[in-house]
Length: 130
Length: 91
Image 1: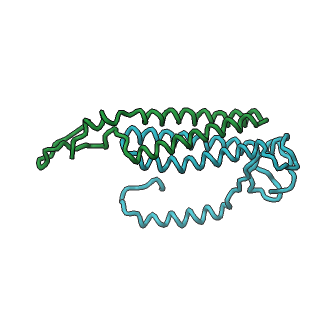
Image 2: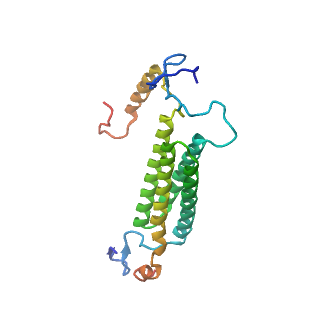
Image 3: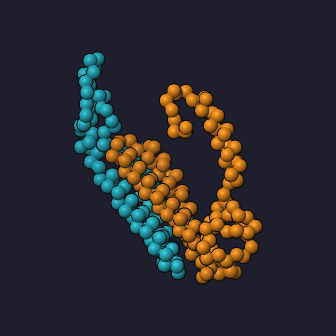
């Protein structure tokens, strides 16, 4: 994390690392953390539980026998995924997540590399890449 | 149930597994209900402890989802397996 920078419109923080994507933390968050769980801890714990549930329900979908049961499990799996992502979005909004943009040169290099592999495609039909 | 006959078989072929709760389904359904019950309890408990209303609301929303999932899963335990099996060709 960079030094204490207070930016109201924090989409991308300039400074030590211009590749950082992070929101400022809510003002009510205590500077000195106590051993007690706070809102952030609770949200994090629920997020972890939802992630665990998506793994569990993925197995449920795979193992369900008849079509109606399979479909219900698939619906529950999808809804659990959506819930998990919503919680992640909330944590991001609250400044609990720091993301880092990859360097452009690395993207370009990997694009070149994997574009070249199109010569190995077994099907004649054009893919989505031009 | 959709069934077709093949020349070498007098038995009708089932195209998909019948709407029967199998032994494996049964084990999973019980597990899934336990996961959902714990999840909704945890959400409700944590939500009550939250001071940020936005976080409380988000966690309660998740808890309500788990409660709805619980009911959706529970329905499958109301399957009449005897009736479903009576329509299944005996092998």
